[in-house]
Length: 182
Length: 61
Image (tube, rainbow over all chains, first blue to last red; front, side, top):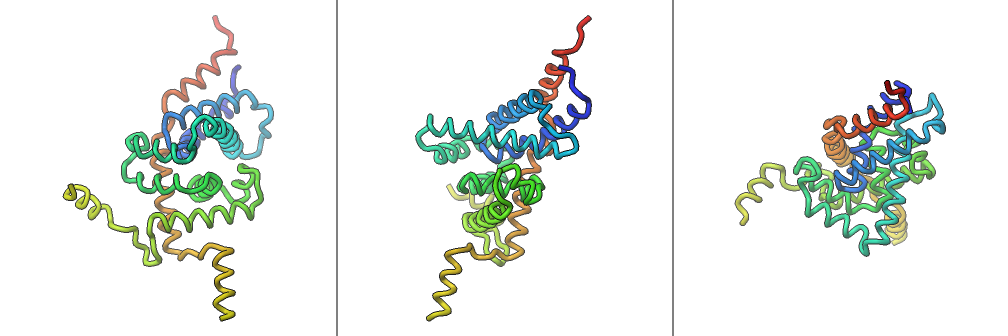
């Protein structure tokens, strides 16, 4: 179907952040791109249900998130250890997840419960307000706030960031350690 | 001690509050990781997909 130019622009414009969100959720670039493609197809098939004047980006994120959730449930039934398998996928294919420097952070993210992970990403990286994130995740604003707080606390524990602001060994030290270690 | 017990209950109910600096560092890392993907822009497959969808309904000569 011929597409309204403004719709086309908005959908295309949302692709980069939809991908970033999808990769953060599923930890795999190929699967994330499939999620984004499916999101676009669903959005355009249901474009009549989009209310003009509301946030197109939030609407697309909602579709992607719902699709991911139903896919995830399906896969969880297929693969015995859902989260564990996901974490292994990440570890075995670091080159698939963009730059190596974010690997440690991504791995830490995988250790969070899915609810907390998505809340943290929506608010902390995608730039949605607590209200918008609550809308996308279909829960109360207070729930989003507490998920974000718990996610931050847990991440800080995993990454061993203390109040002095240390991030463990810095990049250079780590490189030296990795190079001379074995 | 009563105060310690009260404090313990509080700690169990709610995660310890993170310092501003820790929160800032986490936020920075999270955004850097996210923006790394955002900055990759729109891969060709998505623009092509839209073109295909767009072309479907158009009159062909």
